Length: 410
Ligand SMILES: [Zn+2]
Ligand SMILES: [Zn+2]
Image 1 (tube, rainbow, N blue to C red):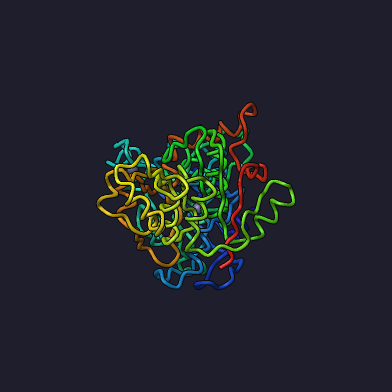
Image 2: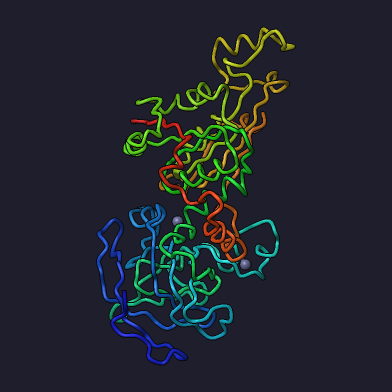
């Protein structure tokens, strides 16, 4: 890809014209347009995009009728590229540097960045208004009319401008078309398994949603020694694809959603140690919580060892364990398990769950970008990928080796 015209004097970059896929309205087909792209402003860099992935978040924002209409707009936030020019005050990058873009930046000076407790920068965090962080304006235009950004990255374009805090310098030896995936989905999944859940060896993991993020969680869990990884997805094609390679065991063809947690408890002998919601469905968060371990599950309770055997038996008979938890049960009705939610809700942002699920020992965590601080942590992930001695951190079909599929046909 190349611009129609480019800056001749690299010390003072000019406006360039390049091609970009522009969304003119919610759900409308993207149109390849000639767009003008301004030079990088202070502390910004202009990048020649090498690779850009399509992330589910792009699609959700593109098709959403609920969110504020920000159009025309250039989507794309998961990309790799090469620095074409730098703005005033940029010392970290030089022209020709290989970079990954990131949708949530790292300024390294704000309270969040210095807290050691968060990876969401106060200054360069998720940008939702379609503009650049620094001046709330756009860098793209068509015949003078502003074209809005997405996540202050907008990588569905031959060239783009990002804040220097929203780019990470990587080794020039790393294949840009591969490490592009570390810019969002793969890193988010690996980080959820490693940083947020800290999946332990021999554990049982359930993953709801088998897109790039879900498969990356599976890969992360596998690399940490999880003994059983169960994938759940509504798309039977994913199971069929895996079955062709003899890597998938479709356990059920049709499962009513209401019984999903019970089915998972049954096949995991009482529930999972970790569950991950990678769909962006807040209802599924509840199911993920309910799928965690519950020692009073009918398959595991032992009435004779309980101080209140008649109550245990009653619960077993009525099979109330996943719906009701009584005060008496709090005494010994203990479960465990950690649910991590990564998905961005497409419709209903509110979630609900019986508080007893938490009181009896389960934990719910949310994460953005898998807890990674992009500038501090991404280079090590790239190195990990480049280290041929280690198992690849990028998910592939072989990731599915230990994944059992539950196909839900609603
Ligand atoms: Zn993404
Ligand atoms: Zn910051």
